[in-house]
Image (cartoon, rainbow, N blue to C red; front, side):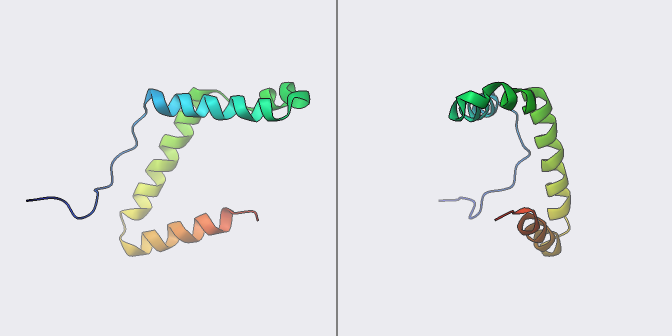
Length: 85
């Protein structure tokens, strides 16, 4: 039996499920604080803008990972630096 031991990285695919998940997340953010729903809705952006951001972020990540293990280390460092705990 032949199989691939590790999954190959794939290009990000924009699907209806991604859009639905994004819109669901925005709706739940508004419903979590009903008194501030209008303010939260004003700060949220549309799904088209989100897809552009995700695609550009994915492209930057794949470019960094294309440089081998050093790209992976840089990616992890940048991810850890963004956390606000």
